[in-house]
Image (cartoon, rainbow, N blue to C red; front, side, top):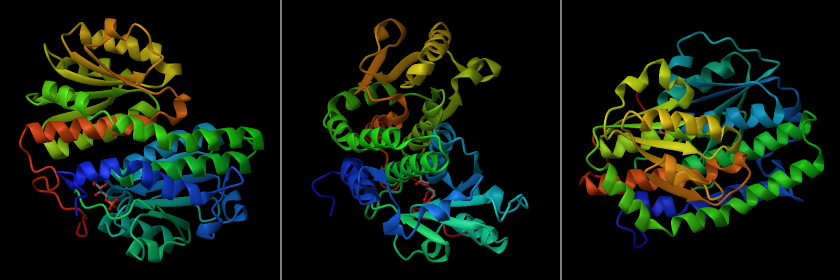
Length: 365
Ligand code: F6R
């Protein structure tokens, strides 16, 4: 059942190249994103002037990636809402101009389903990004883009997140074309870059040893910080959640620029900091944030691409990834974050597939 892996979580981490392939390739026709297999045509998407992503936990974190992508490529405003907040705040929605995207692996999360029903009641078009076929959210949404990750058994979501963000890339490129921010050549180039990700993820997953080593440096930590800017901040949120849920180590994600507005007071000698530095255009700023925490004694793990130079001077440990245009780096940095959490959990003797107090699907409020 675990396909030779000791835990479902590790199996599911390793299934990511296949999950990515199964989700992305049916939606690329003639080298461009195409949602015909989801019965969504260009005319359905053209009228929207705002996107509201509503979800919980990891699924919500995929919304933050979507926000950066869609705003950057298509200049279409995106807000991301916590489903349990959205449902009780009498949200402002415009039935003619807003697209509500509901993201859910299980398709059964109570708050997310309630958010969907609320949006539908207000007459807003609801698009579900869902992994479980025939689930409540898939049935009730106006349109569904299924993620083809296959069953996810481990409580901590891994491959479902990767395919959720893959769909966000496809949507961002599609919206960019529809709104005149990408011509065909540009969209083709982005789509082909996206397709190249699969082999890079597979390559990254071959190296489990170094993650076991990094995990040995984290296993006794009490507090941990994840820092990033731009898309790296969105990934920091997901990395931090993954670590805390399966290792029970307290961790926080911060936009690196927020550090000096409070959290830097928590950095003491030896505090581990996972610094995401995959966004080339922001690297210099990130490097100065890393220096700030280092000078307060932090032990810095830097995740960056393999073209970054002089990294040994700023970080204690460096995790280098294949260099792609920065916008695609989230698809490569997610696996290292998952592996760090996984191996740290193992070293701490935690029940990695079934962490305490957590259920796979939160079907009650
Ligand atoms: C974290 C995790 C949860 C879920 C959240 C939403 O690893 O799995 O945060 O992402 O409960 O679940 P779905 O996607 O089923 O709506």
